[in-house]
Image (cartoon, rainbow, N blue to C red; front, side, top):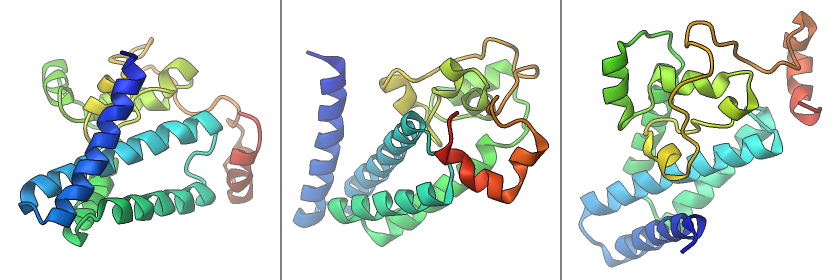
Length: 187
């Protein structure tokens, strides 16, 4: 069987299971875990798609992201408490994964087996396309591993790895109007 089709099947099964669980009033913990996992998977997939089409953290992408989350919550019938918890985790992990925290290789490897660490996520900000188009996860590392988008280490060391987009390095490119126009230009 095609691995992509298998992965798509897992995603569809998660969505259907959650929808049925909510309608059947199954025990709240399994339904909550499925909703939480499904929301994480949808955000991971959306992040990959945004990289593919070149729209990254632009105000329009944020509006699209909100629409995707709303549609997912409605489709899943996710309880409000789970959605709130998910958003808190999403925001908290964004702070942690973008922090300048130095973990030992042993601790990083151990944490990375389940969670996204700052070193794992930093690779996502590499100037190299083959690195910045990986490690899309925001809180758990298994989506990247499952969908083949995991990069364990950058080509250069973590401390020397250049980050950002090579196209927009000038000071003028960092001004507000330039930042708002950038997603519509070539990368």
